[in-house]
Image 1: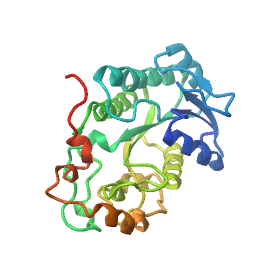
Image 2: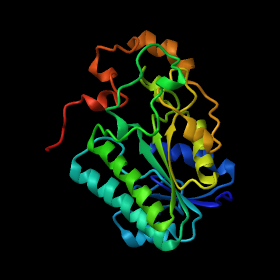
Image 3: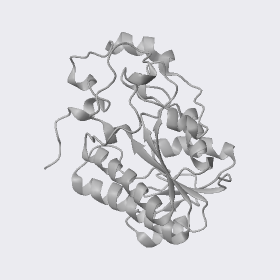
Length: 274
């Protein structure tokens, strides 16, 4: 695919959006920023809600691609997740279809498969022990469920409308990992920008699901489909391991918080009404 020139970045005021605002222009992208929260210092940013279908359609008009980061990024009530993450993502896809946008990069999450057991034993794990990208959905929260919906919506819009998507199951993208679990799923901001760039420019992606992390020594999941896009991660969380292990200890197989890919998302008591 020819390199996208103008890219709509939803969720541009959030943590990941802020990081990508600083990194993606170096790849030649002109970013059109969109968020429900005003972005200081960005007078041209679009301040609107994904529930505003007219505003969403206006935002996608004329762009070459979309990086969709917007939505609630932690657990919340089902009603809130439904409005922001499910209905909002549908509104974006429908607007992109109507305006002829050819590709979306969708921020999925490890929590779409959060109840998948983590690899057993000591890292580094052999390829056959890594969690494959074909793993069926096992969401750990309503938030994770919304990411399953986003992936399935992307598949529908590819099969029915020819709208391509790369769904990136992001582990944790921060300047540095903050827990021992995160050593296995961390994606450095620099690698995040490399992966998004690969997702925007690879040819014939249809609907491709990839795992989003750096080349960590303690990696839990397979990066083959991400590398097939041209992604070459350059960072490794192991440089932070000594400090984090000294503070928190190694992962304990008898600790329920450490048993699954989704970590404490699989064990936290629900704070919402079922």
